[in-house]
Image 1: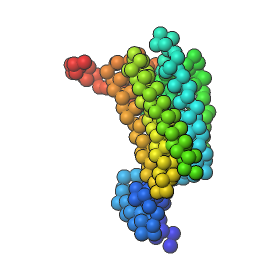
Image 2: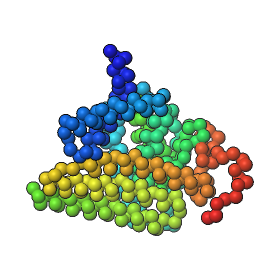
Image 3: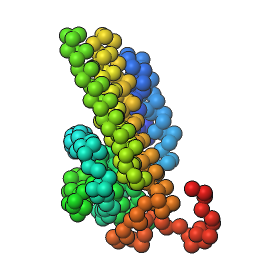
Image 4: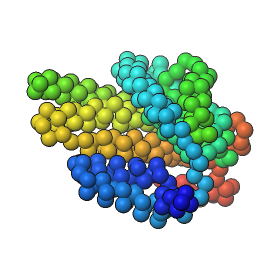
Length: 166
Length: 126
């Protein structure tokens, strides 16, 4: 029975996500739409299962949720800070810097989430990954303390991602 | 109820346009391609987010709730970092910015890891 369920839902999270996206696209919650969304959610993962042989085995959803909240809060705070920099700091006093973040994360999915988070929080843009994927290159708009920014990225985001992608 | 909705919509619109304007100002006034890249990432997050929130609140006050906008926000948040990442990679590839420091455990950055003979291909005109 579990084998059958696993074959029917090779990727249960994706099934739920596709159903939700479908209902949102239709912009109305009716039983028919939910059923059709679930049908899509069953067909699409089954058809595309070939393309993710090494997907992460488990993601802690609760921690992912709290991580999302933290990121949204950081985006809001950092936006105001960067808007202030844009409006007040003249070009000659701007101190952009490259930061090298050594990575403890190894899964490509986790590194992608970290890089996306860094880019979304204003003031930092993730620019490149090293050839073997052991460090991440980050560009900072304006900072006096590049090492501090690196440590904050490591403790605030990477530490949490390490717990999410076990 | 309607007044509260209208005021909230107007507030969100104002904050959103404010951030979009600041993003555009940043795009114009910074003088380096890498620092310029920081401006659009701001516009993409709070600016657009607030405009979409205004749209949601407005639709609720009109009595025809629409939450399409959440989807726009989600897709935007997923795709914006990727385009920023690629612009940054192009900058590094064309040496249009300061050379980044060496990575810590590996030889070099993925973008700079071009085979030697690539150096002989003439640059595209700038």
